[in-house]
Each structure stands twice: as C-alpha cells, then as structure tokens.
Image (cartoon, rainbow, N blue to C red; front, side, top):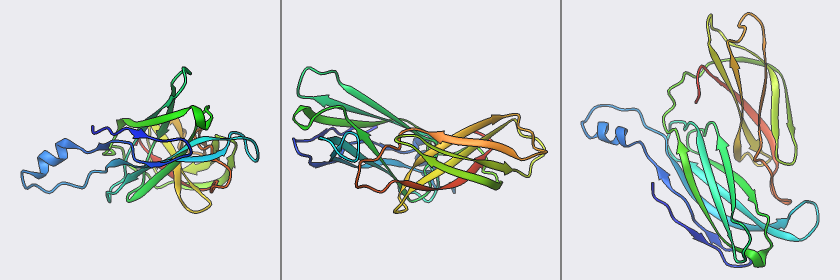
Length: 234
C-alpha cells in the first residue's frame, strides 16, 4: 500500500492523501498471457479541507474534510474500510474517523465528508488510509424485484426500506445494498442489510442503512438510491 500524508494550512488547502489497492494475483496471472477479467481498484484521489458550520445552518465554521475515492476499472469494487486521522496543533487528542462502504460501482468516484471537532487554528493535518479492501467480488449479484421503497436521511444516517423478491429456491444469506447518490448524482456511499435464511416464498422486508452521510451546509445532500442484492458479502 502506498501512503501519502496531507499537510493542510489554516484556512484550507487542497491536498492529496491516500493509497492505491491493486490485486497482485491478477497482475501475476496476466503476465502468463491468460485471459483475466479486470479487477477493480480503489484510489484516494482527492482530500480537500472545506469550511462550514459545525451544526448547520449557522454557527462558527470548522474544518470538514471532503474525501473522494475512485474506482477507475470497468469492474465493481467490493467492501472498503477507510480511516482518516486528524492531527491538532494543540495537545488535544488525535481524532480518528472510519468509513465503511459495501460496494463501489465501476468507473465511479465515492465522495463523503468528515466533520472534525477542531477550530481552524487548532487544525494541523489529516492522513487518510484504505485499511481494508475487497477489489474482486466473489458473490453473485441477484436480480430482485423491488417494491414499496422509502428513503430517509438524517444528519448522518441514511436508510432505505422496502420489500424485494428474488428468483431462487434456496438462499442461506441475502445481502441488500442501497447505493446512495446526492442531489447532483454523485455517489455518496452504501447502506446494507443482511438476511439469514430468508423466506423466499414471500416478499422480504429490508432496511439498508448506514451512517457517515453527514454533509456540510451548501453542498449537495443525499437524495436518491439504487437497490442491489447479492448471495454473499460483496
């Protein structure tokens, strides 16, 4: 993993921080000349400090970190775990912020925000690392019939509820993934629900939710979704 630290001065400066994941086994396999499907990638392509109130719509501006992670491949990417470490110029404790995403579509950039608990004169720098990644999805994507969906978004939590049916006679686990997009169509993350030994003879209720969608005032808010289903962890 390649790691680069972002140093950010008071007031906010564009910076890059991150690491790139590739599947080394795929690269070795390709070197033999055999045909291999493309493996997804995850690259922290942008890390930007923005100023916005701690609690909208008003108040004193604090540093927020806008992060973008790009999958440039034509294949989807599975689970991602990302950790951002925020350092202070004072003796205040270092902040650590985690974000989990179940799925990143092909040729798509994930964008999300980290709200710090510091004032600008206390903010020193931020380092972001992808600490876990699944570049290749081994589970099978199903083709569900989805009905009665409802979307709700709070300050940080997004939830998509509904019912779905899948054309299967046996399924030990069902993973429901809601791809969440903002008002500008930007991919913002996923909500997930897991069903064990679901009853396939009737509609299956789900609640695919997750936190981490907090958005500073003046930026596009989570607004729409797409439902996917898998027979295992993406």
